[in-house]
Image 1 (cartoon, rainbow, N blue to C red):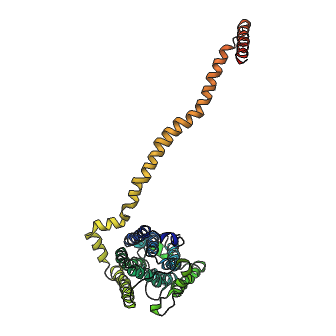
Image 2 (image 1 turned 180 degrees about the vertical axis):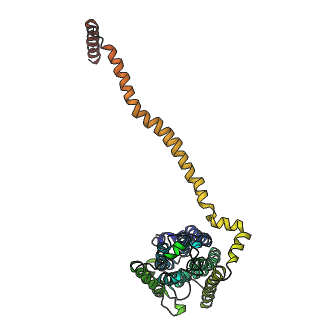
Image 3 (image 1 turned 90 degrees about the horizontal axis):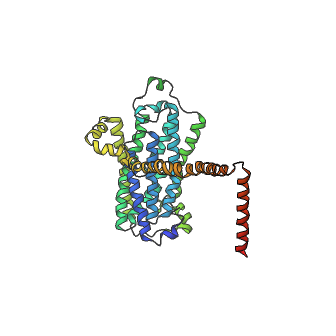
Length: 370
C-alpha cells in the first residue's frame, strides 16, 4: 500500500523517515527474537515480520521497486519455509525444534527444499532472496542521509541474524540425532506427494524468481525495477560501483558468517549456546519472552479492556441500563394497572362521579379552546 501510494509519501519527508526507521527497527527487533525461539512456526513468523520491515525500509528510502521486488521473492521462499514446517510437524507431531533432530534421513525432500528456502531467506548469492534483499540494503546505504546510514547499520546486523536463526532452525531440525521419543521416531516418514510436490515447485521459485531483478553491476538488466519504473519511478543514488560491490560483499560475508556460526553452535559445539544463555541470562530471557511485548500489550490494552467490559459494560450498562429497561417496563405497567384497578370498585355511584367529572373536564376544555 505504501508503494502504491508513493506519490503521496514523496511529498512528506517526515512520513518517509518514519516509515524507514520503523521498518528498520522492526526488522532488527523481529530478527533478534527469532534467534532464540524453539517453536518452528514462531521462528518463521518472526522471520516474516523481519522481512516485512525490510520492505518498509525500501519504501522509506524511496526504493519502492526494491520493496515490491522483495515482497515478490519473499512470497516464494517464505511460503516454502512454512510448508516445510508443516511437513515436519506432520511427521513429528510437535512444533518444538529442541525435540527434533536427524530428520534429513527420514525426510530428504523436505530437508533439501527447506535448505534451499533457508539459503534464499538468508540472502546467499545466486538465490532469489539475495537479489531483492541486497537491493534494499544498497538503497539504504546509497540514500545519502544520516537516517539512511543508521538504517543501513541495522540492516547489516540483520544480514547476519537472518541466516543465523534460519539455519539454527535447519540444524536443530534435520541434523545430529533425533531428540524426540522412540514412539515419534518409529513413525517418522517423508510427507506424501500432495505435500512434497508443492515444496519442489516453490523451491525452484526460491532459486530462480530473483533472476528477473539481477542488478546491472552483476550483468543483469534489473528487469523487475524497469517494469515498475512507470508506476513507482526509480531513486537517483549518487554512489560508485565500487561502493555497491563493497556493500554487497559485506552483506554476503555476514550472511555466510551467520550460517557458519549457526553450524558451530548447533552441530559442532552445542554447549556454546547453553553457556551463552546462562552467562547472558537477562538478555536471553528478554529475547525469549519477545521483549515482553505480549505482557505489555496485555497490561496496556487487554486487561483495561476486560476490566471496562466487566465493570462498566456488563456491571453498569448491561445490569443497570439495559436490564433496568427490560425489567422496568413490566414493573411500570404493573404499577399503572394496580392504580387503575383501585378505580374499578364495582359501586355505581363511584362510576357516576367519574362520569360527571369526565364530562365536566371535556366541557371545560372545549370552552378553553374556543
